[in-house]
Image (tube, rainbow, N blue to C red; front, side):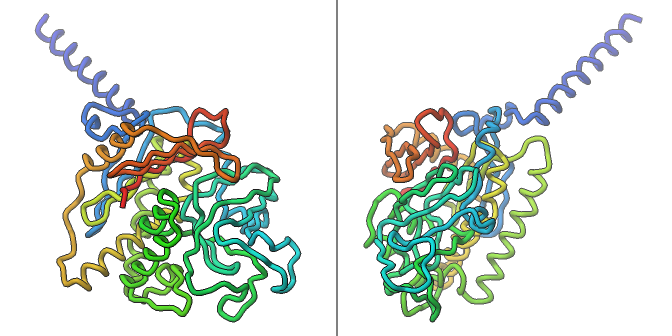
Length: 368
C-alpha cells in the first residue's frame, strides 16, 4: 500500500513539475535549454528560420513592456495618415513649383502634424526632394513638432526637384524599406557621404541595375523579376512565422538575421506592437540583403551558402557591443542616442529623451 502511495506521489510531483515548465514557457521566460540564446538585458533568441543563405531569429524579452512606448508610430504610417511631411530644408509646406526650394544634402526637415511621437530608423529611404536620401540616425519626433534631421544622399547624379520627369516640390515619399547595412553604416556610424555613394554603387552593381542618377532605389525596386520573386518569397515566409508568433503569449520584440553565415543585424524595440509596425520594413531589408548576397555569389560563380548560422554568433555580436564604451549623442531632432563603435560591431540605443531609461529601439550591426 505504501509503495502504491509513493508511486502516486511521484506521478503527481512529475505532473506538477511538467505543468510549471509549460506555464514558464507560455509566460515567455528563458528555460535552462535557452540559456545559450541569452543576449543582454532580458533579451533572448527564439527558434531560427532558415531560408537558403539566410537565417532569421525572433527576439523575445523577459521584461515587462512599456505601454508609453507602445504609442510610437512609424514615419511611413504617419505620412500615409497625412500626419507627417518630409521636405528639403528650404521647401515650405505650400510649395507649388520648383522655385526657391533650396536644400542641403546633409539635412532635411520632418514635420510631425499628429499627436503621437514618430520613431524613425536610420537608413529609412526617402524618394523625391532634390535627390533620394537615407535617414542618418535613429530618433523620435515629438508630437506636433518640426525638426531638422541628419541625412545622406543615396542618389549621386541628381540635384533637382524633378524626379523621373515629375516635380517633387522639394518633398519626399517615405518608403517601407531601409538602406542595406553597408550603405546605412557608412552614414550612421562613419558619417561619410563619399563612402555612402561608393557603397550605393557597389549594391547597384550586385543587383545588376544601372540608372542615370545612380539611386539606391533602383536596387530596392527594379532588380528584375527573378530577384523580386526571391525577395517576396522570403518576406512571405517571415510574415507567416512572425504572424503566428505575434498571436501567441510570447510576442517577439524584434529580430536578428544572418546572411552567408555572418550576422548582419539585431534590431529590437521596447514593445511588440512597435516591432509589428516596423515588421514590413525590416522584412524588406532582410530580403534585399539576402538576395544581393545570392546575386553576388552567382556573379562570382560561387556556391550559394546554405548552412544555417549558429545562434552563438548572434550572442557574441550583441555581448561584444556591451564591452565597448558608449558615447552619448543628441540627434538634431532632440532624441538621445548611445553609440558604440567597435572593430566588429556597431550598436545604437535610441532614447526618446533624457528621462527615458529604456531605449525605444536598439540596433546591433556587423561593422563593415
